Length: 281
View 1 (cartoon, rainbow, N blue to C red):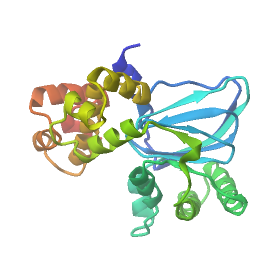
View 2 (cartoon, rainbow, N blue to C red):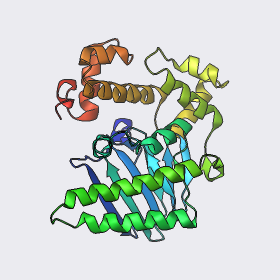
View 3 (cartoon, one colour):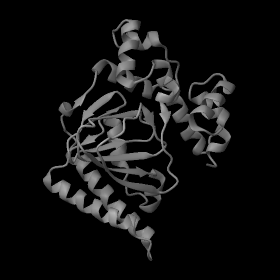
View 4 (cartoon, rainbow, N blue to C red):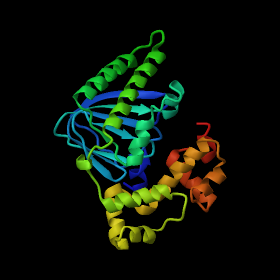
């Protein structure tokens, strides 16, 4: 399988949010991929390692993982044991509209800022989360009067609990995560300087590694080459700017693309639509 498909967009969200409660024995292993929406993963049982942006998390039952849109991630599942999980696909714009100025998506922002996506609720916190999930699951099948409002209210209650857990987990040790400090520092640098010129030689020098060792270690940690990682991050940023109303040509230059035709071609291959149509979509 080519790297372009290993590092592709998976899944679409045509709703405000979608709730999945899944259980199987086979599981599914996806290559590194990303979504246009935010994603909550809650492990109920099983053995799974989740790698998000170069950090690998060994999940335990009741763990909560927050994967922000366009974060590159992959699940590696032990298929010898039943794998039960709850996954919620989430449109952050809907949450902001449903509860304006509430900061319900702050937990995702904090996870991205800390570069640590894992939350581990204690017993009392899990009871609150579990109650919210039960309400949300009941609402998912409800089509009666006020069903959309009930679903939105149940989701709001869950997000409140997740934000409280994020605050209580502020000093959580990274003992449950595996990552390479040099590559983690480079990933932070790339994301902070994504619109600037970035070269492999410069990044290798920052990590105090030889070019060859750096490139090999980077791909082992992220699942893709340095060039493809930078290109995808630039495309992600450009897509966000275009959705916010920035003209496509300006967005491409602000995100580090010097050739608009190359940007247009890469954008269409990645998102399945041209830059001009993604805002409408």
